[in-house]
Amino acid sequence: MKLSEGVEAAIHCAALLAGLAPGKTLPAAALAEYHGVSASYLVKHLNRLAAAGVLVSVPGPHGGYRLGRSAKRISLLDIVLAVEGPEPAFRCAEIRQRSPGALEPDAYQKPCGIKVAMLKAEQAWRQALRAERLADVIAGYEAEADPRALAFGCAFLQRHQRPGDAAAMSASPDPQ
Image (tube, rainbow, N blue to C red; front, side, top):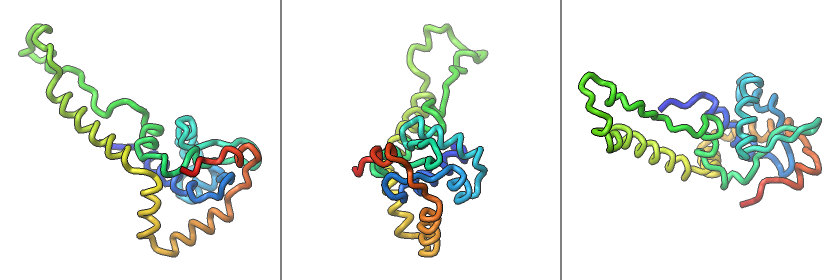
């Protein structure tokens, strides 16, 4: 299964936004700068995350993005589905019914065994992503990261976070 680079960017952005102080936001341009990607490319993915409720987009001069809920309540599956969409990775076209040796349609009452196996594997993959929480990914990174990288991230947030507005502060992600 191949996921777009947008998934990687989206997870990294959500992880960085988890470090914001309550009510603060980070503009898309700052997120793009931090990750070394183009802002126009990143905004597309940030807007998808906001539409899915993973992020909140705050308009205005103090606007930007922040988490829509606690990192403990955001799964990697939430992010993947927001960026890639909910469609299954495998789509069975029932080619077994189009081959030269195909039988009459009534002979294909049972689902295609390949389709069943592929959907079962995808369900297991989705369940594994559903179990992985953004907070756990962040904790793992913080435990293993070079202290210089952590210091850079903290300094970057301090320099670029915006104060948000009253509505943003009252609608901070829940702590759970």
